[in-house]
Length: 191
Image (cartoon, rainbow, N blue to C red):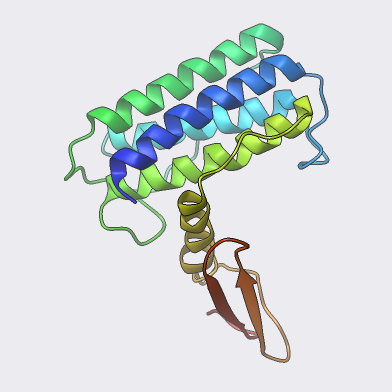
């Protein structure tokens, strides 16, 4: 997928997340994250958005922790989330294609990494917010869903830090209902 497509997904999914969170209320339980309420979800994603934007905007070339979580709730917390989301989208849109900054997965460029990572992060948590609200979740484009699976399998699972292990070695088949199939080989060591 193109960087511009990922940025548009960040923009769209963040708006859907905020709307679902506001409709559910910050006290609502998040069924897909059993220990969380919507306030925890908003604080997490809002902090991640600010953290990601800082790497691009400040050209940070080494890992740094995210900021403090806000002591906000209700409408004020939803607004804080919206502000951070808007800042992330603006940062992604204005970053030069050759921006240099820290990343943690292979990508064609740091901008491509952050646009893709935040598109997937925001989408997963949009689904969480909609699960808290109840009702039918918003649809997900099949090509983008495949992109997210590939980020998980080829990015996260391929890291030495991956905790997905198996003794004895096994093969895991991941099959999309409307797309490709992947084979993941699991052993007792890093991929």
